[in-house]
Length: 368
Ligand SMILES: *Cc1c(COP(=O)(O)O)cnc(C)c1O
Image 1 (cartoon, protein in one colour):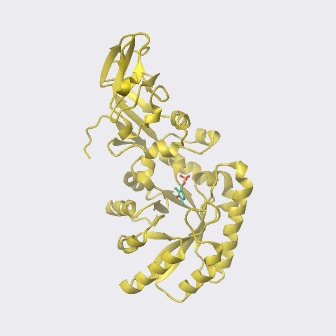
Image 2 (cartoon, protein in one colour; image 1 turned 180 degrees about the vertical axis):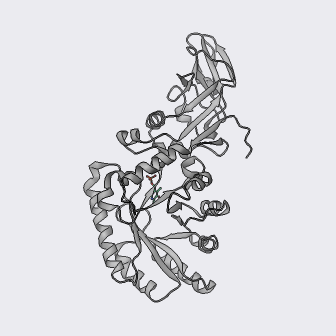
Image 3 (tube, helix red, strand yellow; image 1 turned 90 degrees about the vertical axis):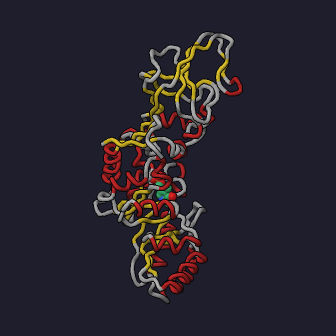
């Protein structure tokens, strides 16, 4: 992709640093930090984020093989956990020195067969246990079979064991979460008492670090959205710095007279004379069509400009009737967590989805 699209996502590395240090300040100094850079680093730029953080964190995680390969191809040397490896990808995972999450007996058996055939040695794996999310993970009842499979070979070793909390941001679910933590602890005891070495343990995501650092810090945490300034809690978010600024420029200004319409399906009809600005960002760039018809808004010269009519694939039109502006002026699609939170709430979603929706067509720039 070239760098000629005027719509850009500015990534503030200084803010990333601030946010990382904020979360580190909540942890013991020897707790390892894994940064999750799946989905292009939450829609930003996984490679640049990883390069920036390489010397500051202990681990990275990605969801899928290709994301790990991209980091290795960019020269990242840090250990990388692949959260959702697939059986057919296991060999490639080793070729690229990536470390798989092994979450079922069947996946473990496939791996053990593979290491024998390929004569691989000292292969690190990470075992994920399901403690209530019911997404991926072994159950407690798998432990004896895991022990049997692992203890009769030397090619593969369990580097860490982990689990994932279902509602770490929701203190109404505190009791459930504490039960998950207890279950994980008893899984750890039962499993490691039968192994000849002790894997390290991790359970907390961003809001887990905020709410359960005392109960479940273990030896590592897995930081994701928090790095980008979202604490899944208004007060926590205030202590974080915004990382992502999405901006564009005005392509054209129109005057729409009373009775005229604008947009596909004539989705906006003027009841008085108004001025509209056309902005080169659309639903193909990650501006959900649900933000159309006044639900979403941008800022031009610090003034709110609501989206008029339907969001198009490549553009939106916004209302600038009361804004003094010209073609070529800068448009801030968003630059604060508050705005991103607002837009997400308005269309019944969460910042995670808004951020990861920013398409690869949008130019990425970096600020330090
Ligand atoms: C995505 C993910 C995380 C990070 O979660 P955040 O809420 O963004 O901090 C941690 N662990 C696992 C297993 C994940 O899939």
